[in-house]
View (cartoon, rainbow, N blue to C red):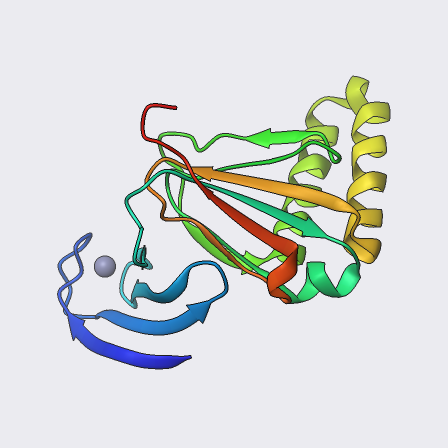
Length: 178
Ligand SMILES: [Zn+2]
């Protein structure tokens, strides 16, 4: 990883001159040279994120198979505003809402987020507790042992996975009509 650009300027959200933008160059397996743009405003907390690789802009499907706990802890998930994430084994399908924020986290961090969300749901809807507990047990096991698939689809090709090992990720370019 290397820093290719770094600048400070006016924040697009609040206008204060405290917006810092950094471009990081990565060579991500299956994506090639990729520049991650990460911006943050110290005044209002606004965050900006963008991803550029040779074929970004094309619809993509990323299939990630975690085979063990190391794959989960040491692979990174980059989800843009337009990426959806599903896992057939864990039983969720997250579509980005209109106010979806982009994020970068380890796959493990993402699953911990799912656990937080499930806990909140359980508190709100105690009648669903059995189902939620079952889901949480599955996710906890997935964090420790892997054994699940994440499928990330992004019509803008702005989502990516930085895998611990190249062989656990496959990237399909989708035609824009599908
Ligand atoms: Zn700001």
